[in-house]
Length: 226
Image (cartoon, rainbow, N blue to C red; front, side, top):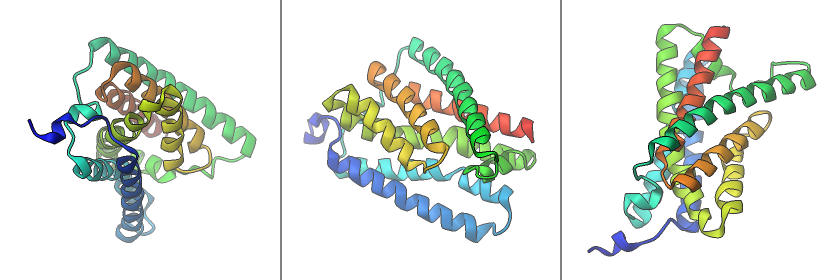
């Protein structure tokens, strides 16, 4: 048996490198958004919708290549059916909570003009092709990439210190990685739900389902409200 197959969960080194790579790729995506679709919020949103997924997969790949652990060390194991059902229910609940937070933020600020995800909404409302492309980026690729990094690497590395770190601290890191403003508490709340599911199930796949349904609901909601 090769030595790498016996290694345990990810370490702080992989956590740090994964986050650094994630942020670096997001900067490149931001430059691409401005350079490839200047002045066009619809196609900026389409390009931007792939940012989290590409950055997450990149961060995970770099973390993985540092030690080449068995994939099970990152929670890439089969999960029981009931965890997927719970994940789907939590996604709907999380979507409802996020709408309440967004509404409350709008009431307090007196304006909805500071939406940090405005271009993503523009893509969802920009017609059939932009909607489909942004949906694939936001509700398929992003949940996969971000969950492999933020749960498979980061939460898994922190779980050795207990639930406060594996769920609480990892959700704060997840939130900060998504920016400040109204998106911060929403992302932290999402991170808490995904972190709990991951810690209890031991599998990253229910987290991917939760994240995918949640993002998909937002995409459809944006399209219908446009």
